[in-house]
Structures are given as structure tokens and as C-alpha cells.
Length: 323
Ligand code: A3P
Image (tube, rainbow, N blue to C red; front, side, top):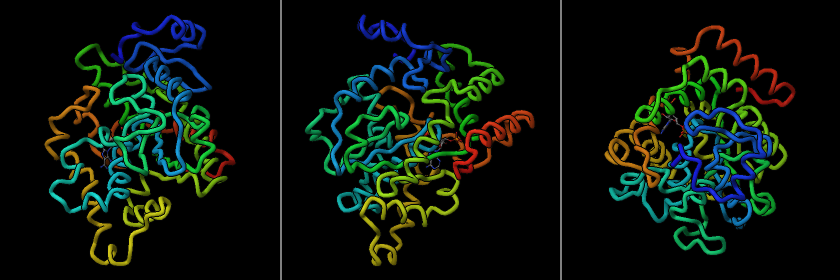
């Protein structure tokens, strides 16, 4: 369905035709809405999500730009907040049989595809706190997310690794339908901001600024830092979510067990993630590639590295953010 743009209402098609349009990576086009590029499918879901979602104070929203480690963040937060109900050591832990994307719904996609649609007031399938995710920039979040105490956890990643990860991911998705965009062309698209929820830098900055202004509401994490010191950042996450690890949990090694359960090696080797499919029909294995920091060194030329570094430096100048 991602490749199609038919099946939309006339009103929605009229909106699409009024928006700036660019070539897409997987879908035929990206549309610029509120300053960011979205596929038609994501935009359809976004409009519905903006109008119909009513956040609660206890909700938790995970936000990423694609390929920043969304699936990892979903696994960690799901495990943390449900550790009373689902013992981390249990052989029946939901992560052992479900892909994290099926445990934590994407708001804009669920609304768009009407699979597991999220009702507004009473989402009985999710107990409190309700846990959701989105790729939307801050500007496009529904007002209720901004006006309630709903917590936001943002994870970002170095743009060089994001580009490499994205290119491989889209190559896998397109392999059955069409040829992949040449690497150099895709790089140019990324640098110019033409990616899902891009420009990448504007996306990151919008949440970085909010995390500095509202420390209780927005927690800002970096993939590389979590990878380097998972123990420290898991504890930060748990404290931010008001479910800190107790002394006993720490002493009995629970934090390390959460790290192990959510690790790339563990998740990527589970049967469900090797051969299963998400509720949207994607192979789960496309979400796991290397899970490393710095794989860009194997793919980008010196010129590409210089260009991306320069853009990042220019965009983040004066913000205090370094990636
Ligand atoms: P690579 O392509 O660099 O390997 P997203 O979930 O936002 O789509 O991000 C996907 C990236 O996160 C991929 O990066 C993927 O391999 C990596 N990833 C998946 N699971 C992970 C985990 N448990 N820990 C760390 N990285 C993980």
C-alpha cells in the first residue's frame, strides 16, 4: 500500500495537490506538510491523528527520525514500564514472540492503515500508561500531546549512520518491486532534507530545544550514548518515567537483564524477528541490520563525510547540540 496513492478521498487528493512535492524513497512522492516531508500515507494518518488523538497525562510517546533506533527504544521502554506484569526473565516475555513494532503502535500509521485503530478516549487494548510512537516532528504533534503531561522520549542518531541505515533499509523494501535509487542520488536527497519526516536536522532540533525547555516532559537520548553506557541511560529512562529501579532490582542485576533482553544480538536472533512479519506485512528482519555505531566509515566517501559534517555543524550552530 505504501507505493499507492489511490484509494484516498477527493478532499485528501486536493490537499496533496496543493502541497510541495518531491521524489520519494519508497513511495512515489513526499509531500511537505508543516515544513517536513511525509509520504501520502503518513500524511493521511497524521491528519487523522492530529484531529482525533487525545493524549492523557500518563501517556508516553516515543519519537524518532527513521533509522535512529526506534525498535530498540520501543523494546527498552516497553520492558521497563511493564516489568511488574511481565518479568524480564520470563520465558513468556512478549518481546520473545512479538516484534517491538507490534507492541508499541505508530500513531500516524495505525490511523492511516486502520489496523488496530486507536480509539480516542478509551484504548482498552493498552493499559495505563499507554505507550505509542511516532516519527512526526514536534510541530505536527496533536495539541493534546503538547498540553498534557504526556511524556516524550526522543532518540536521535548520527546522520551519517542514519543515511547508511536508511539506504540499506529502503533497498530491502524496494528489492521486490523496483530498482533502488543510486547511492549518490539518495545521499543528495538526504542532504537536501528529502526524507521521511525530514529535514533530519530540523526534526532533531525541534525536540532538542523542547528537551532543554521542558526537562520533565521531553527526554533526549542519543543512540551512540545509549549503546556506550546502556546501564546509565536505562536508569535515566526509568527515572524520567517515574519508575526508577529499586536498590533490590539493581543488586539482583535486573538492569543488565533488560539490556540483554533488548540487545541487538538477542532481538535479531529471535525466531519472530528472523522470519515473522509485522501487522503491516513487512518482514521483521528488515529492522535489524548491524546495530553498530560508525558503519558509515564502510560506505561514505571523504567528500560525503565532509558534506554531512558541514551541514550538521551549520544547522546545529548555537544550539549546544552535537552529533
Ligand atoms: P543499522 O541499519 O545501522 O544496523 P529503526 O528502528 O529506527 O528503524 O532503526 C533501525 C536501526 O537500529 C538499524 O541500524 C538496526 O540494525 C538498529 N537496531 C535494531 N535493533 C537494535 C538494538 N536492539 N540495538 C541497537 N540497534 C538496533
